[in-house]
Length: 164
Image 1 (cartoon, rainbow, N blue to C red):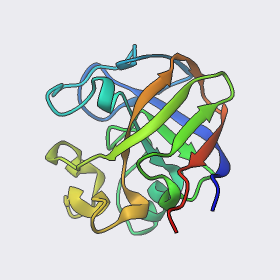
Image 2 (tube, rainbow, N blue to C red; image 1 turned 90 degrees about the horizontal axis):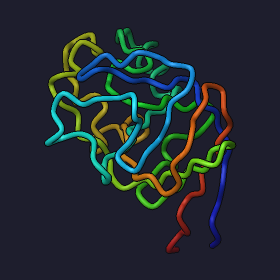
Image 3 (cartoon, rainbow, N blue to C red; image 1 turned 180 degrees about the vertical axis):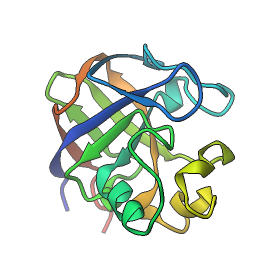
Image 4 (cartoon, one colour; image 1 turned 135 degrees about the vertical axis):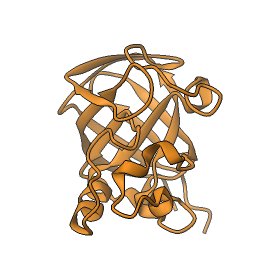
């Protein structure tokens, strides 16, 4: 019944001047409202302190690519693509701590929007909706500790305590 943890790596840091796809960069500064080099095309729905940094697992992207979808890191608007974690364990309340000191807390699942349709062979962005595909959903996080993130930096996922 205690807190569990697992380790992963930043596969890609993704930013844009607004909208998708987000393009890879080697480093990014993280402030309370998100990556300072990233902009959102629709701030009413994305960004801000409660949706500061969006994450998606590399394993989810690879499963979708194997199904024939043209998804790639950053094409669904995630800021961080994380490798090496069982994405089904990334749930609200989980916390990421990165080697450089940045800390993020998962607050919610990101609802897919029509802007990411091009990432899916059939144009159905709901393919990564948490309700139907929980291990392939993006998550929104808030920033607990700002700082600098680097590609290939390690991270630890601290899962919330089980309520069993």
